[in-house]
Length: 362
Image (cartoon, rainbow, N blue to C red; front, side, top):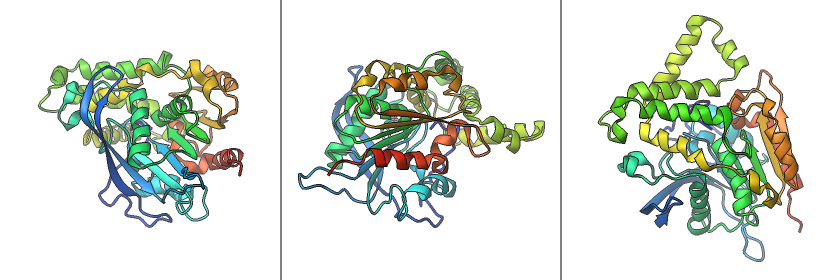
């Protein structure tokens, strides 16, 4: 999920509030001499992650209970549990005793994807000399983290929000025998074109056109360009019903915008943002949808600016997925636009259906 829709605060204690699931355990996996699709390489790539539970294996030694949960652009693994609000609407709905992804039954993995959180990223020091990664590179690193770092050779489920949603489609095509089920939340299985590409390009141009950016070699953040970029991120993530309720007057709307920008600029890095927005440039799973053989439950919300329902792309493309289903959640007081993807209260019944339909035969 883009920071546009859910601002995630990574607190030192991860979740200070009481919760009904074990504390996620942090870890790191370092990939040596990784070569990116561009031909660029790094001697080390660090992938940070959080886990709950423990892997279980069948009689053949294959892991049977691993779940990979993937965050959105500008987020991190902590967006699912790292504040009381996030815990209440995601982890607290899914990971507790008797819940759908009960951490005593499942091995849950939530990485900080490349370019995000505590994983390797341009702001670590390389700036614009950091390899220009794309989604294929990110998915391959997720696979390496699982197989080499955590010794997971099979996934019961891969699910993701926004960028993670797009990654989950790529998982289905790139590693079709590795997973039992896929749940993409808030994306389309098609090339980013039209308005979706235009706002991303406009965001990147706003940073690059700021003289203080200096081709990425700035001594202080290019605030003017970053502010314009944040304006776009905020705008495309807003849900009309909710924001009208939260900001029913001009002054309230101005205050909301000013506060969101001010908070975002405390942690934003211009180069990191350029990289993680640009990483979507090659995304296009549409030609390979027939490769996906496992059950898919794709979910969008009707008030999602980024994936507008009037395009009809999801309804068209899901027919090419052998065991695919698409659900469009109607607009209501509960939906949150693009950010509906992280409120499990709204869609967890569909997750229950997917888990039931994809239960491996014994």
